[in-house]
Structure formats: structure tokens, C-alpha cells
Image (cartoon, rainbow, N blue to C red):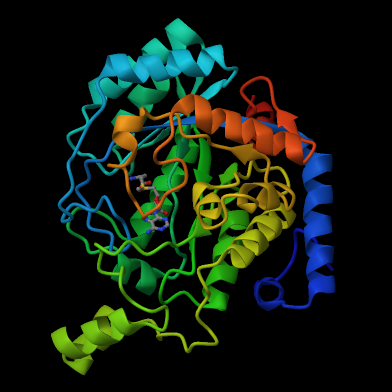
Amino acid sequence: MLNARLSTSEIAAWLRETDAERLQTLWDKADQIRRERVGDAVWLRGLIEISNRCSRNCLYCGVRAERRVERYRMPQNEILDCANFAKKNGLATLVLQAGEDRTLDAGFVAETVQAIRDDFGLTVTLSLGERTDSELVRWQEAGASRYLARFETSNPALYRALHPSVDGGGFTERIDFLKRLRQIGYEVGSGVMIGIPGQTFDDLARDLALFRELDLDMIGSGPFLPHPETPLGNLEISGAYWQTTRSSEDSPKDAASRFSFRYPTTDDQVPNANDLAFKVVALARVLCPDANIPSVTSVATLDGRDGRKSALSRGANVVMPNITPTKYRRLYEIYPNKAATFEDAETTLQTTLRQLDEIGRFQGIGPGSAPNFLARSSASR
Ligand code: SAM
């Protein structure tokens, strides 16, 4: 039965499901739960990529520290111009996102958040990587109320292999970070990449079970898209990178201790494809019915015509149209051909609204907190 108590092995079986009729029952169930729990309104969050500076070297990411790319940080007046655009167009929430930019000053962020609240009355979501409790509290006091940080994979060995610890944390630190955000009182979002090399169907099933265990308010997951200028960029999903790394750089013994996960066989490796992303969206809706679930940019990148709409029809209820000034978009290239890279904010927003219209959905009015978060906040009062 499809319900919030699915076991990890049942989740894995759904992830492997190929029968079109059975999959239709999953899509229908997810869509039904979405309608009952969060309604037909789609919350639009204006995404501003405020800095592409990053101190980490995540093997998959196009803004990783070691990649040579022109770096930028948006000045406050440009961020506030974006807030003005959002306000004028009925976008009640902004998402300020950046790499793990250690030089992004906490005071600058606090002042910017405060100005967005005071001058425009918008809800502010931050996605600025792992920061200290005092910074998180300061930003919350300035008016930020939501925070996004994907845990990327629930397999600690794969997490370790993907995130060389140049600066900071491992998997445990990432999960602790999410728990700290919750304790401080943020509405908390997380998610994973789908089809990252080394990820098995069982891993992905455990990722979904962890969404439920963490009781997330927002769940955003999308396909891994290889960036050619990253270590994971040129491999076939068959795992050439890992095998090369093991044989050329490590003795077999070192390799086993550094990458202690079993490399998946071709059958076990999750493909980095939209059909898997739709299953993750639908299962996330079944497991976490009161969360906000975005239809993410990587899904739209793989299928510009139908990707967003399909995710919205299979459990999603949020879209984050990119409203970053066009001149910066090509520099925030976490993967190539990212949807909307060469557009302006107006075009991106109009495309989103048209797509909602095409599937009989509409832009929500207001901040659109997750029912999960609202229930928790009222219970704690
Ligand atoms: N630094 C912040 C953090 O770590 O939470 C946010 C910025 S980070 C660039 C945003 C997300 O981009 C990551 O959580 C990761 O899931 C996603 N991402 C990076 N490279 C990707 C790729 N090649 N394919 C798909 N998603 C990718």
C-alpha cells in the first residue's frame, strides 16, 4: 500500500518500478495527496544566486573552489532591485543562495535580509551553506525564516567520497546542521541529487526514509547533471571515475578505506534521469504529505517543455523561478545548460506562469509555509 509508513525496501521497489500501470497509481496517489494536503496553489519563490564564491570542492559542482571561473558577489543594491521585482510580481518569498562563501560577511547578510523585510515585506529563505549558530541566529533575528541545505546522499561513505574535507564537514556535520536549523526555529529544507555516481537504489530509498525521519518542511531533489570541468564531469555513469581514482591514486587497501562504499553494478546504479526524479518527488509526497516540494531546475533542464509540469503533476507544489540578473547567471553554472541561463527575470517568471496555466494550477498568494512547519510551530506555542 502507498502510505507514509512505507518501509525502506518498499520504497526501493517503487524506485525500481517500470510497469506503466503501477507507476500511474504512484503518480495518481501523489497528486491526490498533494491536492488534499497543500492544494492547487503553487508557491513561487524568487531565486537569487547572490555569490558563486565557494570554499569547498564537491566533486560534482561547477562552482567548486578549484574550478577556474570568474567569481562574483552581488552588491546589496542589486539584491534589493531583485526584491523589488519580486514584490511587484507577487512573489512573496525570496531565496538567497550562494556557494559555501566563507567571505560572505554575516553582517552584510543580516543587513540585506533586514532591508528585504523592512522595505518589501518579503519572506526570506537562505541557502548559504553550513554556518555557525550565532550567524544563523543573527540572520533569523534580521528576519530570515527558512533555510535550505541538501544532505545530497544518506550514504556516509559516498558523502565522504563526494566531499573532500578541504573545509568543514562530513555527513554527520551536515545532518547536525539540519538539526541545529530546526532547533533555532527555521523552516528547514533539504534534499539529494538523483543518480550521482555511486548511488544505489537502496541508497536513494534510505534518502527518502531520512526525509521522513528528519520531518523536513521542504524537500528539493533533482537529477545529478555532470559538469565537464569537474572530477565527475566526464565519466559514464558506469563509474569510470571511481575506478580510475582507485587504480591510479590509491593502493587497493587505501582505496577501500577512502571509498568504503561498494561501487554499484550497472543494475544497482541509479540513473540520473527525470523518471527517477519524478518517482522521488511522488514518494516524498507520500512519505511527507505536509511538506513543500519544489519542481526543481535540473528537471526543467533535462526537459524544458514538460519537466516542471510533470513534477508538479506528481506531487510538487513549489517552483523557484530564477530572478538573478542575467549577467550573473552564466557564472552560477553548477552544471551546463542550466534552464533559464540566458533569460531575464521577467521571461523566466512568464514561462513559469504559463506552465502553471497549462496544467490548471495557479500562483499562490502569500508566504506559503509548509503545513508541516505551521503545525509544529502552533504545537510549540
Ligand atoms: N552552498 C549551498 C549548500 O551547499 O547548501 C548551496 C549552493 S549549492 C551550489 C546548491 C545545490 O546544487 C547543491 O546542494 C547540489 O545538490 C546542487 N548541485 C551542484 N552541482 C550539481 C550537479 N552537477 N548536478 C545537479 N545538482 C548539482
